[in-house]
Length: 500
Image (cartoon, rainbow, N blue to C red; front, top):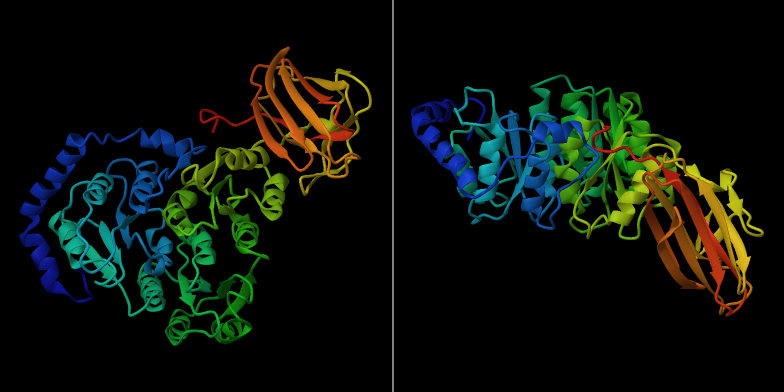
């Protein structure tokens, strides 16, 4: 491994270069033999409206993110973190930057190298030529975090390995910051809590884009190692991520001695992610967003692995949850227009419904049907706000029915791709036993139907590409008077992969 002044290791690298070339070739041959083909990565990276990291296994997810981001031989460095604990990887994104991926490998002192990780490392870096070719592999954490067997296997492939690991995650973040200071002057640092990943991880994409170190500390008091690092780095600005529950006033007051402190925080972790996007990314004029589940126990895997593609795509990270998008996140997306959404993680973490909602807000501005005159209608629809199943919607199509059918029909002019709405009975419907049927027609063909009672709701997402007429109907089923609602009913023109 490379240490400052460690000449013997560099000599050893040169001596075994010929052997390493053979080892690397064997690994690359294993790529083909294992049936792992490299996708059209350049096209993928330039068309970023996609889902990446589609696995619940951290190792596989990180490899997928890497393969969907970097062409063969396109990286000049790779970071290796353990797959079961986020601790030492928290500060890694800034070191990865946009130069190469963050890969996860099985952790623990006795863990054996993962063959898939080694093959991806060989693919993305190309042939290992020792320490003179400018490429490096950074192993994050001590030997109890990532075993010496992993380190040795990478060295034997001909790569220059630098292990960065302190006694704790705090000191590891300090060592990474000092390593970054050898590459460029440090003008600002991010400060985040060390015992939770959410704030540091979503800040990681910005850190990767700007080579801004992330220092982590306990929330109650500034760690002495971090204090020493701030004194040494002397940044102009110290950005504290999260509210006082994450980083106390004692922490920010102590940090104030070493630079101007700015706190960026929301009411919860998804609000902090929005605040980071609004306050840190604004000057970079982001063109897209990166969406992941910020409340999953393994959400850190996707946030850290996707920090690099988010930085490359100029797309800040935002958090969803199992329940969907928070009002804060939806409002941020609704107020801006982006060209693409990178969704990170499998559908079990970010469902297609949540993804569609985010795309609906983030891509081209939706056309709310409450603001459009229908070409045909039956009876007495209104557009007032309404609460459906406990959620208030502002831009609605609402009709009171008992046993009749009423409808609205709109001219789409073949100009839209999707119709989205949340359907259900208004919570203030007169009869608690009311049941209503919702029917959606495209060019005279029934494409979706739902029968819903009070307290039930459904998110609908209907493809309407090339459609001319959209009819939205409500029928009372004779079980009482109910107010049927198409909540936030809208049509969208979606940016396709070819358009981005």
